[in-house]
Image 1 (cartoon, rainbow, N blue to C red):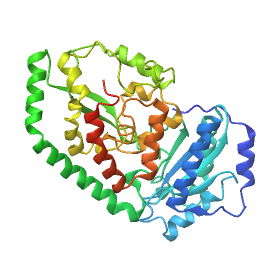
Image 2: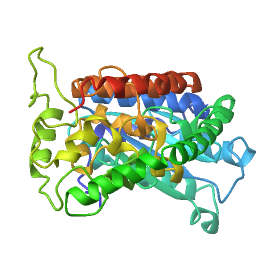
Image 3: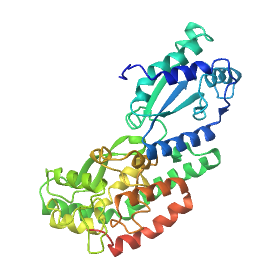
Image 4: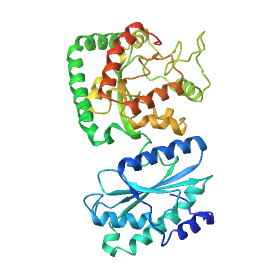
Length: 377
């Protein structure tokens, strides 16, 4: 629940001054998405907060550009300041309003004022029955960005929210994930059996290791691997390692001063067979089932453990805009020997430049990275 501490008078007077002013233009979904992306990047650098308001008009209109939706959008656009913006959030008539330039805890304190202003303007135009069908959702960046349901944009165009001309490519990517994972599961079935038997007969515990991971937009899912560790081990060692690593303290450096990602040198939790299958990446094969189910893709960022995301800086969280994958740019660009911030930059590069051709290049480079063992432990 948001606090109701009175905001500074600047917001109140600025909103009041907008009454009777010429409304700002309502941006289309692409332009508003870019504005949101730009504001998130600016906020990540400056440490300042902003508020995103989603106004769900779906009960009153079928599409964003209908006369009714445009009229309501113009009313809301007449309330905002010169530094703010309003625009459509997608194909559905959901109006987004971006209130910027807050410092400290001003954004959280301003939410009640914003809610009252917007609600009053809409209530003056709509009947009581119509007004009760509208939903207002408020998100304060960065506090509400990952806990919101449904989540606001992570600041990068996701594959699920691609522009219309890319929609066919997104569907084709999913089709290739299904066909590719099925083909690999059939082709590698003897390897599955052999690895499963080795894991079972050499250590106590289940063959598969199940772990909660964070997927696209912060959604949780059950991540599968062949078990490479002793059963019922303590993960506090890995948790402490990742906290240091994400914080840039480089807990594992080699002679060249490079850092190991997601791996711990001489990890005492590993079994002898586990060390072998991890070095050869055979422990990753069950993730083909995650791909088939739709939680993951063949290519994408690696899915983090929930306690890792709690250590993320705001800009790190933008890597969650894309569905996670079994392989990705960082695996074929040095694999484990990449510093955390550099790994995130590679993930963001992938999200910005994604194409089927890029996925193909990553997949073609993956076998060489696996066979070379570069960066693996």
